[in-house]
Amino acid sequence: MAIACKEAEISEQSDTRWRKEYGGLQIDQARRMKDLECENARLRRLVVDLSLVGQVLTDVAAGNL
Image 1 (cartoon, rainbow, N blue to C red):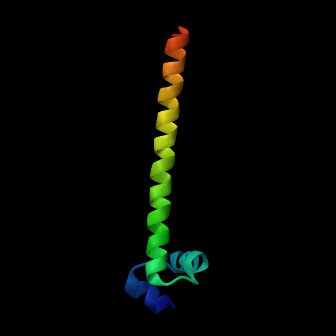
Image 2 (image 1 turned 180 degrees about the vertical axis):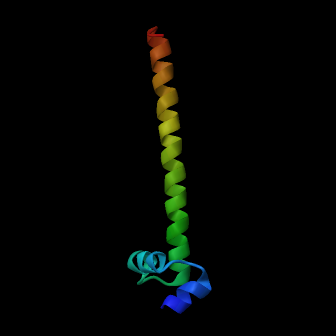
Image 3 (image 1 turned 180 degrees about the horizontal axis):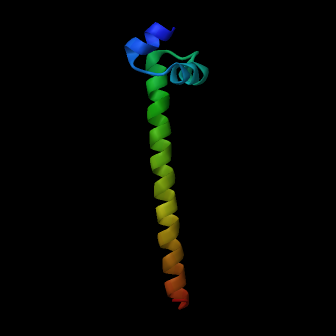
Protein backbone atom coordinates (compact mmCIF):
# COMPACT_ATOMS: atom_id res chain seq x y z
CA MET A 1 0.00 0.00 0.00
CA ALA A 2 2.85 2.38 0.79
CA ILE A 3 4.29 1.95 -2.71
CA ALA A 4 0.91 2.59 -4.37
CA CYS A 5 0.41 5.75 -2.30
CA LYS A 6 3.90 6.95 -3.19
CA GLU A 7 3.26 6.37 -6.90
CA ALA A 8 -0.06 8.22 -6.67
CA GLU A 9 1.70 11.01 -4.73
CA ILE A 10 -0.71 10.87 -1.79
CA SER A 11 -0.15 10.09 1.87
CA GLU A 12 -1.24 6.80 3.38
CA GLN A 13 -3.45 8.82 5.75
CA SER A 14 -5.26 10.36 2.77
CA ASP A 15 -5.72 6.92 1.24
CA THR A 16 -7.14 5.53 4.49
CA ARG A 17 -9.52 8.48 4.85
CA TRP A 18 -10.63 8.15 1.21
CA ARG A 19 -11.27 4.41 1.58
CA LYS A 20 -13.25 5.01 4.76
CA GLU A 21 -15.43 7.67 3.10
CA TYR A 22 -15.74 6.31 -0.46
CA GLY A 23 -14.72 2.66 -0.11
CA GLY A 24 -17.95 1.07 -1.32
CA LEU A 25 -18.52 3.41 -4.25
CA GLN A 26 -17.56 3.11 -7.89
CA ILE A 27 -15.34 5.86 -9.30
CA ASP A 28 -18.21 7.63 -11.08
CA GLN A 29 -20.33 7.48 -7.93
CA ALA A 30 -17.51 8.98 -5.85
CA ARG A 31 -17.06 11.79 -8.39
CA ARG A 32 -20.80 12.48 -8.39
CA MET A 33 -20.84 12.55 -4.60
CA LYS A 34 -17.91 15.00 -4.53
CA ASP A 35 -19.64 17.21 -7.12
CA LEU A 36 -22.83 17.20 -5.05
CA GLU A 37 -20.88 18.16 -1.92
CA CYS A 38 -19.35 21.13 -3.76
CA GLU A 39 -22.74 22.18 -5.12
CA ASN A 40 -24.26 21.89 -1.65
CA ALA A 41 -21.54 24.11 -0.18
CA ARG A 42 -22.12 26.69 -2.94
CA LEU A 43 -25.86 26.70 -2.29
CA ARG A 44 -25.33 27.08 1.45
CA ARG A 45 -23.15 30.15 0.86
CA LEU A 46 -25.82 31.55 -1.44
CA VAL A 47 -28.53 31.08 1.20
CA VAL A 48 -26.37 32.82 3.81
CA ASP A 49 -25.73 35.74 1.45
CA LEU A 50 -29.41 36.09 0.60
CA SER A 51 -30.40 35.86 4.27
CA LEU A 52 -27.95 38.62 5.10
CA VAL A 53 -29.31 40.85 2.32
CA GLY A 54 -32.86 40.18 3.53
CA GLN A 55 -31.93 41.10 7.07
CA VAL A 56 -30.28 44.35 5.96
CA LEU A 57 -33.34 45.27 3.90
CA THR A 58 -35.61 44.52 6.85
CA ASP A 59 -33.48 46.73 9.10
CA VAL A 60 -33.48 49.56 6.54
CA ALA A 61 -37.25 49.33 6.10
CA ALA A 62 -37.74 49.46 9.87
CA GLY A 63 -35.45 52.50 10.13
CA ASN A 64 -32.93 50.76 12.36
CA LEU A 65 -29.84 52.06 10.59
